[in-house]
Image (cartoon, rainbow, N blue to C red; front, side, top):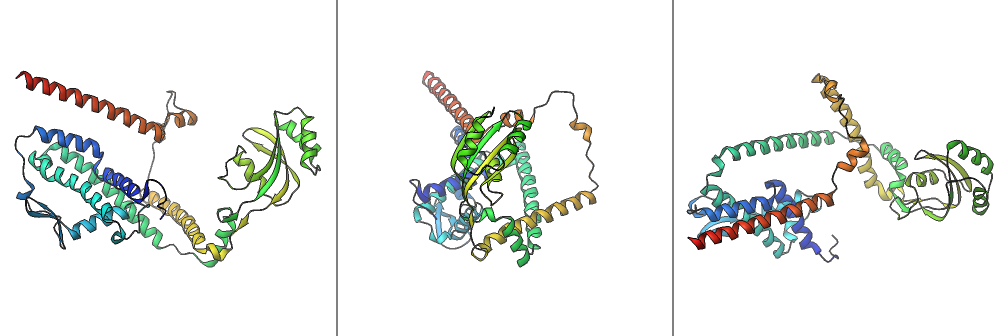
Length: 375
C-alpha cells in the first residue's frame, strides 16, 4: 500500500470509514445534528446502563457505559472487519496490522452512532414512530434487493470456467491493455472541409514517403487544418491534444510510412504516419493472471446477458412503449449530459446547504438565548 502521500494511511482509512458510515445511516452530519439538537431539548434521558448491550460477545471489554460492559473485543473486530471488506480500497487488509490510533478512531466514530441509537433513540421511542418504521422498511427493502443481486452475481460467477485457449484469445484481443512500453509515431494531419476534398487529396498524397513532403503538399490545398505531431504515443493516457480516435487508427496498422484516409467527427482527414515503433506488450505468461481476470469478466458479461434474457422470457415481461412517447419537448442526449451534475457541483451544493444550515442553527441559537435572557 502506498503511504507516501501527505494524507497517509490514516487519512485514507478515515475517508473510507466516513463513506461506509454514511452509506449505512444516510447522512452522518444530518443525523448527528438532529440527534444532538433534540437530545439537548430532552429533560429526561434513558441511560445505556439500563440495557443489555448487543455488542458484548466475547474477549476483552473495550468500552463500559456507567460501569457496565458495552462493547467487547469480538464485536469491535467483527464491525471493523466488515468495514474493511466493504471497500475495494481496504478489502483484504489484516485488521491486526492496523495501528492502534486507526482502530481507536474507528471505535470513537462507531460509539457516536451507538449512543445516538441507545440514548437519544430510546429516550424518544424513535423506533416506535411511524416515520422510523417507514424509513426502516424502505431501507430493508433496498438492502434485500441488493443482497439478492449480489447472491445472483456470485452464483453466476461461480460457474465461469476459462480454458487456456480462452486466455490466449483474450490476450491477443486485449494486447493494448498489457503494454510494457508504448509505441511512438510521427504523424502529420490534414483536415478538410468535406469528405470529397479529403478523398481527392488522399489519392494525390498516397505515395508520399516523408512527413516533410506530405506537409508541403497539404499546405498547397484548401484545408481547415494542417499540423505536425513529431511524437505521438500509443498510450491512451498520455497528455496530448491528439484526437484519441485518430490515435487508435494510427496504431491499428504496423506499417509505416503510410497515408490514411479517415472519417472522424463528421470530418474528412488525411494523415501521414512515419517513424513508427509498435507498442511492446508483456509476454503472455507474465500477465496470465491479469488476462484471466479479463477473460472471466468477458465471459461473465456474456453469460449474464443470456441469463437475463432467459429470466425476462420466463417472466413474460411486456413494456408499454406508449409511456415513453410524448409530444412534450424532451432533453437531447447532449442537453441531458449537461443537466447531470458533476461530483464537484454536488459537493459545492452540499457545502452551500451546510453553510445555510449552520447560519439557521446559529440564528435559532441566538433567538433561544435572547428568549431565555428575557425570561
